[in-house]
Image (tube, helix red, strand yellow):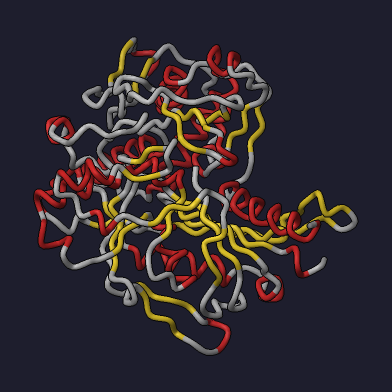
Length: 454
Protein backbone atom coordinates (compact mmCIF):
# COMPACT_ATOMS: atom_id res chain seq x y z
CA UNK A 1 0.00 0.00 0.00
CA UNK A 2 1.58 3.27 -1.06
CA UNK A 3 1.59 5.65 1.85
CA UNK A 4 0.56 8.56 -0.37
CA UNK A 5 -2.99 7.17 -0.69
CA UNK A 6 -3.90 6.70 2.99
CA UNK A 7 -6.58 9.11 4.22
CA UNK A 8 -8.39 9.58 7.51
CA UNK A 9 -12.11 10.30 7.83
CA UNK A 10 -13.63 11.72 11.00
CA UNK A 11 -17.32 12.07 11.87
CA UNK A 12 -18.32 14.05 14.97
CA UNK A 13 -21.90 12.85 15.41
CA UNK A 14 -24.53 13.69 17.97
CA UNK A 15 -24.05 10.55 20.06
CA UNK A 16 -20.74 9.12 18.88
CA UNK A 17 -17.42 9.95 17.26
CA UNK A 18 -16.15 7.79 14.42
CA UNK A 19 -12.89 7.50 12.52
CA UNK A 20 -11.86 5.46 9.48
CA UNK A 21 -8.67 4.93 7.49
CA UNK A 22 -8.97 4.39 3.74
CA UNK A 23 -6.40 3.48 1.13
CA UNK A 24 -6.32 2.78 -2.58
CA UNK A 25 -6.79 -0.89 -3.43
CA UNK A 26 -3.59 -2.71 -4.48
CA UNK A 27 -3.37 -2.81 -8.25
CA UNK A 28 -6.42 -0.58 -8.77
CA UNK A 29 -6.08 2.99 -7.45
CA UNK A 30 -9.66 3.76 -8.55
CA UNK A 31 -10.94 1.42 -5.81
CA UNK A 32 -10.50 1.82 -2.05
CA UNK A 33 -10.18 -0.47 0.92
CA UNK A 34 -11.03 0.19 4.57
CA UNK A 35 -7.79 -0.22 6.50
CA UNK A 36 -9.25 0.32 9.98
CA UNK A 37 -12.16 2.02 11.72
CA UNK A 38 -13.32 2.87 15.21
CA UNK A 39 -16.33 4.41 16.98
CA UNK A 40 -16.66 5.78 20.50
CA UNK A 41 -19.74 7.00 22.36
CA UNK A 42 -19.31 10.69 23.19
CA UNK A 43 -21.58 10.80 26.25
CA UNK A 44 -21.28 14.57 26.07
CA UNK A 45 -24.78 15.76 27.05
CA UNK A 46 -24.73 18.40 29.79
CA UNK A 47 -27.09 20.98 31.28
CA UNK A 48 -27.36 24.27 29.38
CA UNK A 49 -24.91 26.97 30.42
CA UNK A 50 -27.81 29.47 30.56
CA UNK A 51 -30.74 28.67 32.83
CA UNK A 52 -32.87 30.78 30.50
CA UNK A 53 -32.63 27.97 27.93
CA UNK A 54 -34.98 25.91 30.11
CA UNK A 55 -35.57 22.21 29.66
CA UNK A 56 -35.58 22.67 25.88
CA UNK A 57 -31.85 23.44 25.88
CA UNK A 58 -29.63 20.76 24.38
CA UNK A 59 -25.89 21.18 24.91
CA UNK A 60 -22.77 19.02 24.87
CA UNK A 61 -19.39 19.24 26.57
CA UNK A 62 -16.79 19.84 23.85
CA UNK A 63 -14.02 18.34 25.99
CA UNK A 64 -15.85 15.00 26.09
CA UNK A 65 -16.28 15.01 22.31
CA UNK A 66 -12.57 15.68 21.78
CA UNK A 67 -11.70 12.99 24.31
CA UNK A 68 -13.80 10.47 22.36
CA UNK A 69 -12.05 11.60 19.17
CA UNK A 70 -8.62 11.07 20.75
CA UNK A 71 -9.68 7.60 21.93
CA UNK A 72 -10.85 6.73 18.40
CA UNK A 73 -7.56 7.72 16.84
CA UNK A 74 -5.52 6.00 19.54
CA UNK A 75 -7.33 2.74 18.68
CA UNK A 76 -6.25 2.90 15.01
CA UNK A 77 -3.00 1.28 13.83
CA UNK A 78 -0.06 3.59 14.57
CA UNK A 79 1.79 2.71 11.36
CA UNK A 80 -1.22 3.60 9.23
CA UNK A 81 -1.70 6.90 11.07
CA UNK A 82 1.90 7.79 10.30
CA UNK A 83 1.10 7.35 6.60
CA UNK A 84 -1.98 9.61 6.58
CA UNK A 85 -1.75 12.24 3.83
CA UNK A 86 -5.19 13.79 4.09
CA UNK A 87 -8.02 14.20 6.61
CA UNK A 88 -11.72 14.61 5.86
CA UNK A 89 -14.00 15.89 8.61
CA UNK A 90 -17.79 15.69 8.87
CA UNK A 91 -20.19 16.17 11.76
CA UNK A 92 -23.59 17.15 13.06
CA UNK A 93 -25.07 20.12 11.21
CA UNK A 94 -26.88 23.22 12.50
CA UNK A 95 -25.24 23.34 15.94
CA UNK A 96 -23.00 26.16 17.20
CA UNK A 97 -20.14 26.55 19.66
CA UNK A 98 -17.90 29.50 20.50
CA UNK A 99 -14.22 29.96 21.26
CA UNK A 100 -11.46 32.53 21.62
CA UNK A 101 -9.16 32.63 18.60
CA UNK A 102 -5.63 31.72 19.51
CA UNK A 103 -6.82 30.27 22.83
CA UNK A 104 -9.29 27.60 21.74
CA UNK A 105 -7.09 24.65 22.67
CA UNK A 106 -3.87 23.59 24.32
CA UNK A 107 -1.52 21.13 22.62
CA UNK A 108 0.31 18.53 24.68
CA UNK A 109 3.47 17.99 22.67
CA UNK A 110 5.91 15.10 22.66
CA UNK A 111 5.73 11.34 22.36
CA UNK A 112 3.07 9.27 20.64
CA UNK A 113 0.21 10.93 22.55
CA UNK A 114 0.36 14.45 21.13
CA UNK A 115 -3.20 15.72 21.52
CA UNK A 116 -5.12 18.95 21.91
CA UNK A 117 -7.52 19.79 24.71
CA UNK A 118 -10.23 22.47 24.45
CA UNK A 119 -9.63 25.76 26.25
CA UNK A 120 -11.68 28.97 26.26
CA UNK A 121 -14.62 27.26 24.54
CA UNK A 122 -18.36 27.17 25.18
CA UNK A 123 -20.60 24.14 25.18
CA UNK A 124 -21.82 22.93 21.81
CA UNK A 125 -25.48 23.95 21.43
CA UNK A 126 -26.74 21.15 19.20
CA UNK A 127 -29.26 20.89 16.38
CA UNK A 128 -31.69 19.34 18.89
CA UNK A 129 -31.87 22.55 20.91
CA UNK A 130 -35.42 23.81 21.36
CA UNK A 131 -34.93 27.12 23.16
CA UNK A 132 -36.11 29.20 20.17
CA UNK A 133 -39.89 29.16 20.42
CA UNK A 134 -42.17 29.68 17.45
CA UNK A 135 -42.88 33.19 18.69
CA UNK A 136 -39.20 34.02 18.98
CA UNK A 137 -38.48 32.68 15.48
CA UNK A 138 -41.35 34.78 14.11
CA UNK A 139 -39.69 37.89 15.57
CA UNK A 140 -36.48 37.35 13.60
CA UNK A 141 -35.85 39.11 10.28
CA UNK A 142 -36.81 37.24 7.13
CA UNK A 143 -33.70 35.62 5.60
CA UNK A 144 -32.64 36.13 2.01
CA UNK A 145 -32.45 32.40 1.41
CA UNK A 146 -34.46 29.47 0.13
CA UNK A 147 -34.15 27.89 3.60
CA UNK A 148 -36.20 28.68 6.68
CA UNK A 149 -34.62 29.36 10.06
CA UNK A 150 -35.55 26.88 12.79
CA UNK A 151 -34.67 26.31 16.42
CA UNK A 152 -31.28 24.59 16.68
CA UNK A 153 -29.92 26.51 13.67
CA UNK A 154 -26.70 28.36 14.49
CA UNK A 155 -27.86 31.85 13.59
CA UNK A 156 -31.18 31.44 15.41
CA UNK A 157 -29.28 30.32 18.52
CA UNK A 158 -26.96 33.33 18.31
CA UNK A 159 -29.98 35.63 18.01
CA UNK A 160 -31.43 33.98 21.14
CA UNK A 161 -28.16 34.44 23.04
CA UNK A 162 -27.98 38.07 21.87
CA UNK A 163 -31.39 38.71 23.43
CA UNK A 164 -31.11 36.56 26.54
CA UNK A 165 -27.36 36.31 27.33
CA UNK A 166 -25.54 39.21 25.61
CA UNK A 167 -22.65 39.05 28.09
CA UNK A 168 -22.05 35.41 27.14
CA UNK A 169 -21.32 36.36 23.53
CA UNK A 170 -18.79 39.00 24.58
CA UNK A 171 -16.55 36.24 25.93
CA UNK A 172 -15.82 34.84 22.46
CA UNK A 173 -14.73 36.05 19.04
CA UNK A 174 -15.24 32.93 16.89
CA UNK A 175 -18.10 30.51 16.24
CA UNK A 176 -18.70 27.40 14.18
CA UNK A 177 -19.97 23.84 14.21
CA UNK A 178 -18.10 21.23 16.24
CA UNK A 179 -16.25 20.07 13.12
CA UNK A 180 -15.37 23.65 12.15
CA UNK A 181 -13.79 23.95 15.58
CA UNK A 182 -11.76 20.75 15.15
CA UNK A 183 -10.49 21.83 11.73
CA UNK A 184 -9.59 25.30 13.05
CA UNK A 185 -7.64 23.78 15.94
CA UNK A 186 -5.83 21.21 13.79
CA UNK A 187 -4.82 23.81 11.21
CA UNK A 188 -4.24 26.73 13.57
CA UNK A 189 -6.65 28.88 11.55
CA UNK A 190 -6.85 32.56 12.60
CA UNK A 191 -10.56 32.50 11.71
CA UNK A 192 -13.04 29.61 11.56
CA UNK A 193 -13.76 28.21 8.11
CA UNK A 194 -17.14 26.67 7.30
CA UNK A 195 -18.37 24.73 4.27
CA UNK A 196 -21.29 26.15 2.32
CA UNK A 197 -23.30 23.08 3.36
CA UNK A 198 -22.93 23.95 7.03
CA UNK A 199 -23.49 27.65 6.40
CA UNK A 200 -26.83 26.82 4.77
CA UNK A 201 -27.71 24.74 7.83
CA UNK A 202 -27.16 27.77 10.09
CA UNK A 203 -29.66 29.99 8.27
CA UNK A 204 -29.22 33.47 6.78
CA UNK A 205 -26.99 32.13 4.01
CA UNK A 206 -27.68 32.57 0.30
CA UNK A 207 -26.52 29.50 -1.60
CA UNK A 208 -26.60 31.24 -4.97
CA UNK A 209 -24.31 34.10 -3.97
CA UNK A 210 -22.44 31.87 -1.48
CA UNK A 211 -22.61 34.61 1.13
CA UNK A 212 -24.14 35.43 4.51
CA UNK A 213 -27.09 37.84 4.65
CA UNK A 214 -24.75 40.41 6.20
CA UNK A 215 -26.92 43.48 5.61
CA UNK A 216 -30.01 41.85 7.12
CA UNK A 217 -28.03 40.56 10.08
CA UNK A 218 -26.20 43.83 10.75
CA UNK A 219 -29.45 45.78 10.71
CA UNK A 220 -30.75 43.45 13.43
CA UNK A 221 -27.71 43.93 15.65
CA UNK A 222 -26.39 40.42 14.98
CA UNK A 223 -22.68 39.96 15.90
CA UNK A 224 -21.53 39.26 12.33
CA UNK A 225 -17.87 39.14 13.39
CA UNK A 226 -18.64 35.67 14.78
CA UNK A 227 -19.63 34.27 11.38
CA UNK A 228 -17.05 31.92 9.83
CA UNK A 229 -15.45 32.40 6.45
CA UNK A 230 -16.96 30.21 3.71
CA UNK A 231 -15.35 27.51 1.60
CA UNK A 232 -16.83 25.05 -0.87
CA UNK A 233 -17.40 21.60 0.64
CA UNK A 234 -14.47 19.36 -0.19
CA UNK A 235 -11.98 22.19 -0.55
CA UNK A 236 -8.75 22.35 1.41
CA UNK A 237 -9.13 24.11 4.76
CA UNK A 238 -5.44 24.06 5.64
CA UNK A 239 -2.66 21.84 6.90
CA UNK A 240 -2.17 20.40 10.35
CA UNK A 241 -0.03 22.76 12.40
CA UNK A 242 1.04 20.11 14.95
CA UNK A 243 1.81 16.44 15.01
CA UNK A 244 -1.44 14.82 16.20
CA UNK A 245 -1.05 11.45 17.90
CA UNK A 246 0.80 9.58 15.10
CA UNK A 247 -0.44 11.84 12.29
CA UNK A 248 2.40 13.98 10.92
CA UNK A 249 2.35 17.77 10.87
CA UNK A 250 1.42 19.36 7.53
CA UNK A 251 -1.47 17.09 6.49
CA UNK A 252 -4.36 18.47 4.40
CA UNK A 253 -7.75 18.90 6.06
CA UNK A 254 -11.17 19.35 4.47
CA UNK A 255 -14.59 19.77 6.04
CA UNK A 256 -17.71 18.10 4.67
CA UNK A 257 -21.15 17.57 6.07
CA UNK A 258 -24.38 16.23 5.23
CA UNK A 259 -28.92 13.43 6.88
CA UNK A 260 -32.87 10.85 4.34
CA UNK A 261 -31.30 12.64 1.40
CA UNK A 262 -31.32 12.33 -2.38
CA UNK A 263 -29.15 14.16 -4.90
CA UNK A 264 -31.13 16.46 -7.16
CA UNK A 265 -30.79 16.44 -10.96
CA UNK A 266 -28.04 18.58 -12.43
CA UNK A 267 -29.18 22.17 -12.89
CA UNK A 268 -31.80 22.02 -10.13
CA UNK A 269 -32.24 25.30 -8.26
CA UNK A 270 -34.52 25.61 -5.23
CA UNK A 271 -37.11 28.38 -5.05
CA UNK A 272 -35.57 31.39 -3.33
CA UNK A 273 -38.61 31.95 -1.11
CA UNK A 274 -38.60 29.57 1.87
CA UNK A 275 -41.70 27.51 2.60
CA UNK A 276 -41.99 26.96 6.37
CA UNK A 277 -44.45 24.08 5.85
CA UNK A 278 -42.27 22.10 3.42
CA UNK A 279 -40.93 18.84 4.92
CA UNK A 280 -38.03 18.67 2.43
CA UNK A 281 -35.27 21.26 2.33
CA UNK A 282 -32.44 21.65 -0.16
CA UNK A 283 -28.84 21.92 0.95
CA UNK A 284 -25.74 22.56 -1.17
CA UNK A 285 -23.83 19.49 -2.24
CA UNK A 286 -20.63 18.99 -4.20
CA UNK A 287 -20.04 20.61 -7.58
CA UNK A 288 -22.81 23.20 -7.32
CA UNK A 289 -25.57 20.60 -6.96
CA UNK A 290 -28.18 20.19 -4.20
CA UNK A 291 -29.44 17.48 -1.90
CA UNK A 292 -33.13 17.15 -1.11
CA UNK A 293 -33.16 16.41 2.61
CA UNK A 294 -35.92 15.18 4.90
CA UNK A 295 -34.31 15.98 8.23
CA UNK A 296 -36.55 14.40 10.83
CA UNK A 297 -36.05 15.45 14.43
CA UNK A 298 -37.40 12.08 15.62
CA UNK A 299 -35.18 9.05 15.09
CA UNK A 300 -32.75 7.25 17.33
CA UNK A 301 -33.38 9.89 19.98
CA UNK A 302 -37.01 8.72 20.22
CA UNK A 303 -35.86 5.15 20.80
CA UNK A 304 -33.49 6.45 23.47
CA UNK A 305 -36.36 8.31 25.12
CA UNK A 306 -38.47 5.15 25.11
CA UNK A 307 -35.62 3.10 26.61
CA UNK A 308 -35.05 5.72 29.31
CA UNK A 309 -38.78 5.72 30.11
CA UNK A 310 -38.84 1.95 30.51
CA UNK A 311 -35.72 1.97 32.69
CA UNK A 312 -37.19 4.75 34.83
CA UNK A 313 -40.47 2.87 35.27
CA UNK A 314 -38.55 -0.19 36.44
CA UNK A 315 -36.47 1.94 38.81
CA UNK A 316 -39.70 3.37 40.25
CA UNK A 317 -40.78 -0.23 40.87
CA UNK A 318 -37.51 -0.95 42.66
CA UNK A 319 -35.78 -2.78 39.78
CA UNK A 320 -32.46 -1.41 38.55
CA UNK A 321 -31.77 -2.37 34.91
CA UNK A 322 -29.09 -0.99 32.58
CA UNK A 323 -30.57 0.91 29.64
CA UNK A 324 -28.34 -1.08 27.25
CA UNK A 325 -30.01 -4.28 28.51
CA UNK A 326 -33.46 -2.74 28.05
CA UNK A 327 -32.62 -1.78 24.46
CA UNK A 328 -31.29 -5.23 23.62
CA UNK A 329 -34.33 -7.02 25.06
CA UNK A 330 -36.88 -4.80 23.38
CA UNK A 331 -35.24 -5.21 19.95
CA UNK A 332 -35.15 -8.99 20.45
CA UNK A 333 -38.87 -8.93 21.29
CA UNK A 334 -39.71 -6.80 18.23
CA UNK A 335 -37.70 -9.03 15.87
CA UNK A 336 -39.98 -11.90 16.92
CA UNK A 337 -43.09 -9.70 16.55
CA UNK A 338 -43.16 -9.25 12.78
CA UNK A 339 -46.34 -7.17 12.65
CA UNK A 340 -48.74 -5.19 14.82
CA UNK A 341 -51.95 -3.20 14.52
CA UNK A 342 -50.72 -0.70 17.09
CA UNK A 343 -49.89 2.69 15.55
CA UNK A 344 -47.40 5.11 17.07
CA UNK A 345 -46.75 8.60 15.73
CA UNK A 346 -43.33 9.21 17.31
CA UNK A 347 -43.01 12.99 16.93
CA UNK A 348 -42.24 13.74 20.57
CA UNK A 349 -39.94 16.56 19.39
CA UNK A 350 -42.24 17.91 16.69
CA UNK A 351 -40.73 18.56 13.28
CA UNK A 352 -39.27 21.74 11.84
CA UNK A 353 -42.17 22.03 9.40
CA UNK A 354 -44.66 21.05 12.16
CA UNK A 355 -43.08 22.41 15.36
CA UNK A 356 -46.21 22.00 17.50
CA UNK A 357 -46.91 18.39 16.54
CA UNK A 358 -46.90 15.88 19.40
CA UNK A 359 -46.62 12.11 19.55
CA UNK A 360 -49.63 9.80 19.78
CA UNK A 361 -50.56 6.13 20.13
CA UNK A 362 -53.70 4.81 18.41
CA UNK A 363 -55.41 1.52 17.54
CA UNK A 364 -54.68 0.22 21.03
CA UNK A 365 -56.05 -3.22 21.84
CA UNK A 366 -55.28 -5.61 24.67
CA UNK A 367 -53.63 -8.02 22.22
CA UNK A 368 -51.06 -5.44 21.07
CA UNK A 369 -49.56 -4.33 24.36
CA UNK A 370 -46.54 -6.61 24.58
CA UNK A 371 -43.03 -5.16 24.48
CA UNK A 372 -42.58 -6.63 21.01
CA UNK A 373 -45.77 -4.99 19.70
CA UNK A 374 -44.92 -1.58 21.13
CA UNK A 375 -41.29 -1.62 19.97
CA UNK A 376 -42.29 -2.79 16.47
CA UNK A 377 -44.91 -0.02 16.29
CA UNK A 378 -42.40 2.57 17.48
CA UNK A 379 -39.76 1.57 14.92
CA UNK A 380 -42.40 1.49 12.19
CA UNK A 381 -43.63 4.91 13.25
CA UNK A 382 -40.13 6.41 13.04
CA UNK A 383 -39.70 5.14 9.49
CA UNK A 384 -43.24 6.05 8.44
CA UNK A 385 -42.76 9.58 9.75
CA UNK A 386 -39.66 9.91 7.59
CA UNK A 387 -41.52 8.39 4.66
CA UNK A 388 -44.32 10.94 5.07
CA UNK A 389 -41.71 13.71 4.72
CA UNK A 390 -40.02 12.22 1.66
CA UNK A 391 -42.33 9.55 0.12
CA UNK A 392 -41.20 6.70 -2.11
CA UNK A 393 -43.13 8.27 -5.01
CA UNK A 394 -41.06 11.45 -4.74
CA UNK A 395 -37.84 9.45 -4.74
CA UNK A 396 -39.02 7.71 -7.91
CA UNK A 397 -39.68 11.06 -9.60
CA UNK A 398 -36.13 12.13 -8.73
CA UNK A 399 -34.77 8.97 -10.33
CA UNK A 400 -33.63 7.29 -7.12
CA UNK A 401 -32.96 3.59 -7.75
CA UNK A 402 -31.42 2.44 -4.45
CA UNK A 403 -31.65 3.27 -0.75
CA UNK A 404 -28.46 3.26 1.30
CA UNK A 405 -28.96 3.11 5.05
CA UNK A 406 -26.18 4.09 7.45
CA UNK A 407 -25.63 5.33 10.98
CA UNK A 408 -25.72 3.77 14.41
CA UNK A 409 -29.53 3.73 14.75
CA UNK A 410 -29.81 1.41 11.73
CA UNK A 411 -26.61 -0.58 12.19
CA UNK A 412 -27.69 -1.65 15.69
CA UNK A 413 -31.41 -2.16 15.08
CA UNK A 414 -32.65 -5.05 12.92
CA UNK A 415 -36.27 -3.89 13.35
CA UNK A 416 -35.57 -0.47 11.87
CA UNK A 417 -33.83 -2.17 8.93
CA UNK A 418 -36.92 -4.30 8.32
CA UNK A 419 -39.20 -1.27 8.46
CA UNK A 420 -37.01 0.70 6.02
CA UNK A 421 -37.24 -2.19 3.55
CA UNK A 422 -41.00 -2.28 4.09
CA UNK A 423 -41.49 1.44 3.53
CA UNK A 424 -39.19 1.87 0.53
CA UNK A 425 -39.74 -0.83 -2.13
CA UNK A 426 -36.33 -0.29 -3.72
CA UNK A 427 -33.08 -2.22 -3.39
CA UNK A 428 -31.85 -1.37 0.10
CA UNK A 429 -28.31 -1.82 1.39
CA UNK A 430 -27.04 -1.11 4.87
CA UNK A 431 -23.59 0.16 5.67
CA UNK A 432 -21.53 0.32 8.81
CA UNK A 433 -21.73 2.48 11.91
CA UNK A 434 -18.72 4.44 10.63
CA UNK A 435 -20.11 5.24 7.16
CA UNK A 436 -20.03 9.02 7.68
CA UNK A 437 -16.34 8.81 8.58
CA UNK A 438 -15.74 6.56 5.56
CA UNK A 439 -17.46 9.11 3.34
CA UNK A 440 -15.28 11.93 4.63
CA UNK A 441 -12.15 9.83 4.09
CA UNK A 442 -13.32 8.85 0.59
CA UNK A 443 -13.72 12.48 -0.47
CA UNK A 444 -10.18 13.15 0.70
CA UNK A 445 -8.84 9.99 -0.96
CA UNK A 446 -10.46 10.87 -4.28
CA UNK A 447 -8.93 14.33 -4.11
CA UNK A 448 -5.51 12.83 -3.42
CA UNK A 449 -5.81 10.39 -6.32
CA UNK A 450 -6.94 13.15 -8.68
CA UNK A 451 -3.95 15.27 -7.72
CA UNK A 452 -1.59 12.35 -8.30
CA UNK A 453 -3.08 11.74 -11.73
CA UNK A 454 -2.62 15.39 -12.71
